[in-house]
Image (cartoon, rainbow, N blue to C red; front, side, top):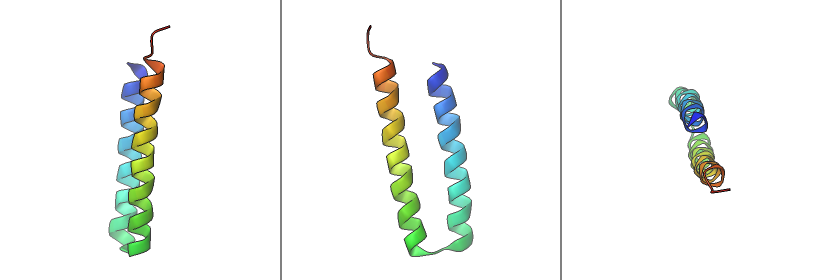
Amino acid sequence: MTNLITGLIGLALVLTFLGILVVWIKAIPLIIIVVCVMILAVIDFVRSLRTNDAPR
């Protein structure tokens, strides 16, 4: 449960930070990079939650 909460807080903070940068700079290549990075971060977060919840 702790991994879920801290992971969501971390993702929200990264998304907020990168969102501010994208709004401030407004460059198409930066937007593409930020979207790709956030997709990869969410995929990694979901995978890490699934591996930690596996029965032992």
